[in-house]
Amino acid sequence: MRLRLSLIVKLTLATSLILVGFMGILDYINLKNFRKATIEYAISNADQLTEIINQSTYDAMMKNDKASLYLMADRIAQSRSIEHISIIDRSGKVVFSSHKSEIGTIIDQKNAACIFCHQPNNTRLFSPTNNSSRLYRTANGAEVLGYTKAIYNQPECSTGACHFHDKDHHILGVLDITLSLESLRQQSHEYRMQFIVMTCMLLLFIGVLITFLTQRLVDRPVQRLVQHTARVSAGDMDARIPITSDDELGDLSEAVNDMTAGLAKANEELKEWAGNLEHKVEERSQEIKQMQAQLHRSEKLASLGNLVAGIAHEINNPLSGILLYASIVDNDKRLDPSLKPDLERIIAECRRCADIVKQLLEFSREALPHKEAISLNNLLDRVVGLLQHQPSFQNISIKRSYDPDLGDVFVDSNQMQQVFVNLFINASHAMPKGGLISITTSQPDGGGFACVEIGDNGCGISEEDLQRIFDPFFTTKAEGTGLGLSISYGFVENNAGKIEVASKVGVGTTFTILLPLQGSGEEEQGAI
Image (cartoon, rainbow, N blue to C red; front, side, top):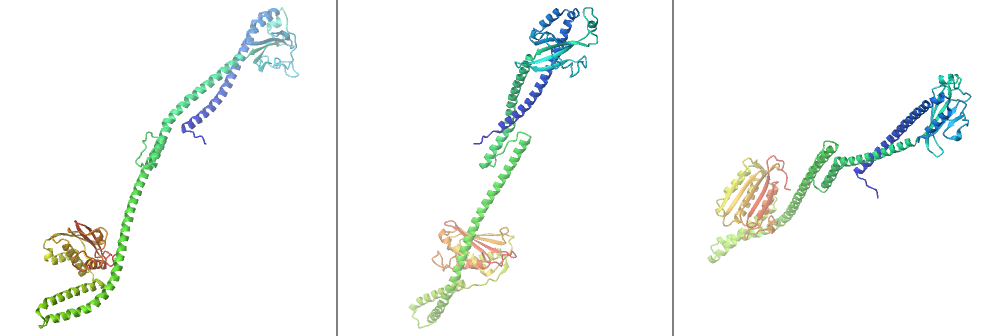
């Protein structure tokens, strides 16, 4: 499983590694400079020490008191920081050494104590001011500093009465001293340890500081972003990130808020679109269902019309003969008066049958409408004027709400008058004790149709009967043929209109008819 490191850990580790590398380089440079400075300091001390020895032994050298000279040098060699002291003459002979075994030995000119004065094939000193220092390790591994200082031939030495040196000899010998660098090593070690401790403390301080700052300035805003995205993914589109800084993370938070607002808007649009789509699908399904019902009704009416036409013709001929001979007998004076009422009843029923046959023929006949531009409001007023004085309308109030700006409709006025008469009569039959018929005209926006609503507060129609109300021969009344609404439906359809009905038992029934307006482009189309 892959190890997952947090952002704080990554930043802390990266910063610590950079700091460790930088401090390591700085430690190397500082230790190198410190060692250089301490060596230079040790060389300076060695130079001062040899100068002090030279000055301290000056009187003994002037008196040629070698015993006092060697005793003083031996005492100086007892110091803890001094590993070794030796005095070498011009010939390379060790005339004094803190290591007694070296006294009297001859030092090779290639020896470190002599090499600074002597070059190959030449025993002359190039410069009487040269001193030599060298670093090396002893047999036990201790690091020491060797320092050789020339003993120059002073004028007092070449002219003194006690002893004599040739004045041409510039250097009489050398004083070689070896100093221990253990104390310097200890100081260097202590300095390194202090530097390491300081580096660790600095790393700890910077790590804590970076952790604190990263958690406050980076981790918290990032956590807010993560929590925000979790809320958005859970569907909370109203979630917003509080902007607490004016930097890149603040800009990012603001951008995420803008993105969330865009997602919320898109989601609302999607929901609205889905709702509209669902509504449109339902609306379209209803339209398809209505079209299927209308198509089924039209096919049914067409096939039934052909059948009815044949039957009506077959019935009409014998019925006409019966009515003719019944009328002749009725006028015959030889008729028994007691039979006259029965004969009149036969004539009345024959005439009623003749009217039914006439309606059947009208139903079966596909009459082409003679369309013209007329005022729908005036047409309705004319129909009301024809019916309102009849006995069945005496207890019925008629309420008219017309649109005064309604345009003319392009229909067959005779057919539409018959439709409205049929609807008003049906409404009166639904209110035998009286009631209210409301007539409302309007013009729906953008539809190209005029709308008329004819409603009553009668007994209403059940849901089951409402599905069959436009079927031929269907009626809920004791009287009637059941062809009125079928014929009305056909007339509205022939005039490129639409007819719908809504009803509730005990509340009333409302018929809604849409008729094409003059110049709307719908006037020549058939019903859909």
